[in-house]
Image (tube, rainbow, N blue to C red):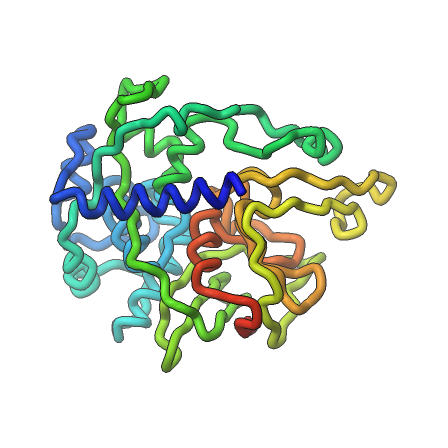
Amino acid sequence: MRGTVLYKAIAAVLVAAGSGMGATAAGSAVSTEIERIVTAPVGPGAAGARVIRAQILLACARFSPGEIDGRYGDDLGIAIKGYQENHAMKPTGVIDAEMWESLNSHTAPLLIPYTITAADLKGPFEPIPKEAAEQAKMKWMGFESPEEGLGEKFHMSPALLAELNPGMKPFMVGEQITVADVGRAPARRALRVVVSKSKRTVTALGAGDKVLAQYPATIGGEHDPLPIGNWKITIVDHDPWFNWDPVHFWNVSPALAAEKLPPGPNNPVGVVWMGLSKEHYGIHGTPDPGHVRHGESYGCIRLTNWDAYDLSRMVVRGTPVILEE
C-alpha cells in the first residue's frame, strides 16, 4: 500500500502547509508575481505568473486544471468554463475581471515553503522500461526522479518546480523549496459521477446535483470508444497491480505474452483504479499527467494521479457513473 500511504501523506502535508500561519514562500521573482492580485484577462495563448495563479486557484476550488505548468492549454480552458458555468457566469473559457474577483476571494498564500524530507529523496528512482515484459520485472513502478515525485506531490510540472526554485538542483534533505499550495477542503461523498465525452471531463456531483469537483480526462478514442451508458463503481483499488494483456490493446502484437505489472505512480493506471460495471473499463490515474486530455486512451477514463486519488475519496462501491456524449 506504498502509494496509498504516499497520497495520504501528501494530503497531510497540504493540510499542514495550508494552516501554516500565513507562511509565504520567498522563491524566485515569478513567485512575487503569482501572489499579486490581478484582473487582466487570461485566455488562449497566455502564459506565466497570471496563468499559474489561475491554475492554483482553480485547483483549490476543485475545478482541476490538470498539471500546473504556467501555460493556457485545453485543460485550463475547460476548468475555467466549468467554474464559470457553476458560478452563473458566461462560459467563455477566458478569465475576466468578474471571474478574477470570484477566484481572488481565496486569500491564503498560493505558494508555500516546503522542507524536503528523506522520504522525498529515498527512491529508488529508476527509468521505466517501455516494454511490458521488462516492466513486469520491477518491484515498484515509482518515480524516475525526485523532481518528478515532488512535482506530482504539488500538482506541478517538473519544469515549473525548477523555475520556482532556480539553482536548487539536486535537491537536498532539509532544503526549503517553493511549491504550489494545492490543499483542498475535505472531500464530500459523490452521489453520482458524470463522464462527458464531448467536454472530456469527469464531474463528481453531490446532493441536488451540486458540483463537488470537475477534472480533465483522457477518454476513449477511435479504436476504443467510450461505452456510453449508465454504470456503477464496482471497486476502488489503490496501488493496483495491472494485468497487461495484448488482446486489450489495438496497437500491440497479439503474439506478446500477458504480463502482471507492479503498482506505483508510474503503473499504467497510476495510483488508483475505480472499476466500472462495464467489464474492463474504469476511471484511473496515469503515469503521464502532462498529457491528460490530449490524445486518446484504450477506452478507459484517465485522470492525473492526484485527481484520481481525490475522486477515489468521494466514491464507493455502487456509486452511479454516467458516461455521456
